[in-house]
Length: 162
Image 1 (cartoon, rainbow, N blue to C red):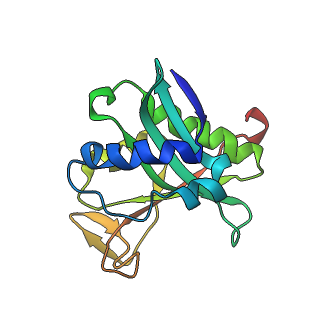
Image 2 (spheres, rainbow, N blue to C red):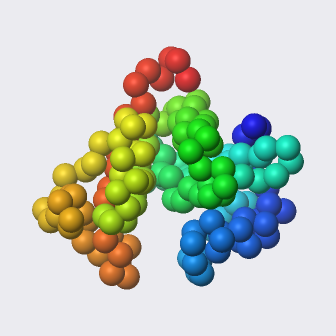
Image 3 (cartoon, one colour):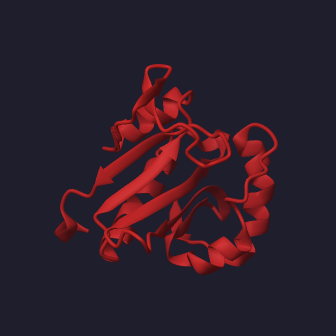
């Protein structure tokens, strides 16, 4: 497997794949050419024999100079459970660390128990919140459009190892 930096030409494929990989119509603005253009260094693809099997899109925070944020990750369902998501995250951690970031943040929906467990295995901690949904601390209306999210934080252990 190869993990490489995404380019704008990859956008068309991942936009088409997102519907299948997401399990329904995917209509978010999280995937766009402009995003890949402006945050190319932290937008990564996993390829196996020339086929895109996963991707991660993130950015370096301008407001919090020690932080990076993972906006979205998807892995082809046929390739899940093979370490692709973990490899994408670990490569993102290395990239963010090499660019001077020591904190990684991301979110998932409160009902996505597998996602919550996956992030815990990667060393993310759930940020405390005033409310819980389904027994999980959740930020209510996280996106300002009614979306509730579990908010994760990971502190990179040893920057010198990155």
